[in-house]
Amino acid sequence: MPENSFDIVSKIDLQEVTNAIQQALKEVRTRFDLKDSKSNIELDGKEAIVLHSVDEYKLKAVNDVFQQKLVKRGVPLKGLTYGAVETSLGGTAKQRITMQQGIPIEKAREIVKVIKNSKNKVQASIQGDLVRVSGKDRDTLQQIIALLKQQDFGIDMQFTNYRTN
Image 1: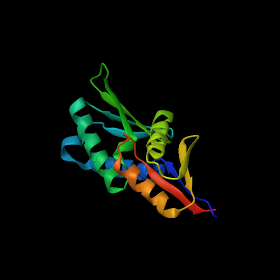
Image 2: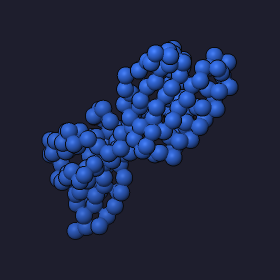
Image 3: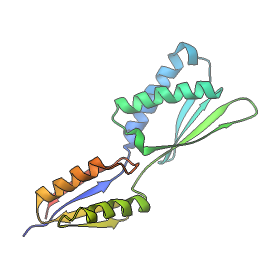
């Protein structure tokens, strides 16, 4: 009997984030209330974004513009973790946003527990930063996907590599 499987992952498309940053910066530089605010959004490595502005109020406005652009490009806001707003002596404010790449081990264990408690005939295994679910019948796998979509694990999940071996 062929074995069917799929992976549960949590990844943010960096290309879409880069595009959203460029679009947001374009709007920030032309918006009347933010024009001379020395605001900036930059990608810091592969897992963080840093927002800069003159003060916290303008920083929040820049963040709102940025979030709108992310949503338009299909980037889930659930995959972003916001750090505290840091203010410096010059009055400038900055905020670091961490992007989630991969499922944290505690969340992966939670997902596996929900799958096991569902009493369906499937196996769930944690493999690095993803969870692989396999079973004999495709309908059961689709029931698992539907079950997981109903749950809120506090992270954004995608279901990939749906295949028959």
